[in-house]
Structure formats: C-alpha cells, structure tokens
Amino acid sequence: MVYFADILIFIAFILVIADFFAMSYGVFTTAGAIFFIIGTIVLFSVMHTVPSFFIRIVLPTYVVLTVFISIVVYLAYKAHKTRVKAGKSALIGEVGEIVRDIKSTKEGKILVNGELWTAYSDYEILKGAEAIVINLDGQLRLDVKPFDKNNK
Image (cartoon, rainbow, N blue to C red; front, side):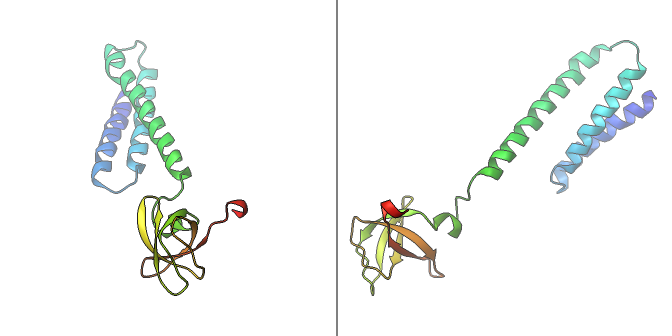
C-alpha cells in the first residue's frame, strides 16, 4: 500500500511538470493535485506515526497549493465578471467630447476614453458638446449622435 501511495505522489509531480509543456489548460495540474492529496492520505493512513517530512514538506505543500488555487479561482472569477475593455463592444455606448465640429456632410473629431477618433454623424454637433458612440465602421470611424444627459 505504501508503494501505491508513492506511485500516486510520483504521478502527481509528473502531471504538474507535464502541464508546463502541454496545453492542458490546468487539467494536468488539477489531476496532479488530486493524485497528490489521495497519495498522501493513503500514505499516512497506512503509517501509524507522522513522519517528520510530513511537517516539513507535505503540510507546506498543501497550504501553498490551497492558497494558489484559491487565488487563481478568485482572479478567474473576477476576470470573467469584468466588462470587455477593448474593441468595438467597448466603444459602443461610450460618451465622448467633440474636439472638432461634426457637420452632417463632414467628419469631425471626438475624444473617447482618452483616444482621439474620427467621427461622423447625421446631426450637427459643435466643439465642446458631448456625443454618444452608436457604431464603429470598417474604416475605424465612429458614428455618433448628440448625448442627452436627461435621456441616457
């Protein structure tokens, strides 16, 4: 039974090392962690005394593994909940300030999130006014309309 536990722990370390070289998206590491836990439980259920290397090696490994997995899960959850901050979907609905007048037949400039964009509109919007982004076309120009603070 001790050999079985040793083999499980050895396989656990091999799986963690294999995850560095294979694109398993953490599956090998997760399997390695499970094998490590099962292997140590089997190992210490057979032994009647707690060896000194358990306190020096195995216990700190459990603690570090638990903390690491908790941090990764928290950061993954936080990243999953955040709004997209790039691309077309991030621009649509944003409000910016007109830097150069936009006439109905002529392009102007708008400052959105600290970036200067070329903009066009069906409306005439003067410099200093606020406008909301409706669309982003294939030429990286923003389609905007006047922003009404009362009618968000």
